[in-house]
Image (cartoon, rainbow, N blue to C red):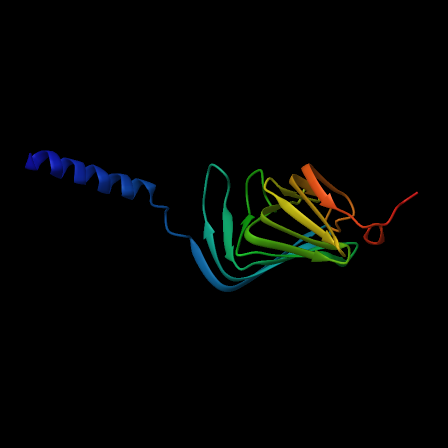
Length: 174
């Protein structure tokens, strides 16, 4: 019986070691970066700390604590996003995408959004969230899931919509 229990304990330790993530390649405090395309600033990312991690499966990524992302359109800040954690994909198919999670808040002149997960899809110039999103404009509120939006929140698409809209908060383009 002693041999059996020793074998089981040995297996558990081996599984723990296999599931442990490799250490980060690099760790930084006071992290900041920016992305430009053809000399035009697209976004900036600032965070308290960061870790660079390698992955052949999904590409290298930089994990940032308490990130602040500013997305630019035509040289001006279009939206400011904050969250508890962010991931910048530095290689792979999601290169230059920024994923945010944990109390995500986005603010701009057209309103604000609140969710638990949000991804800036750089190639498409869109924001995407698979989880519930709350969009607020003045006194109007709109809830839904699977949101896609442009950064200035002028065009927002969601599924399973629930809303309370007031005409004073919405501009009608005729």
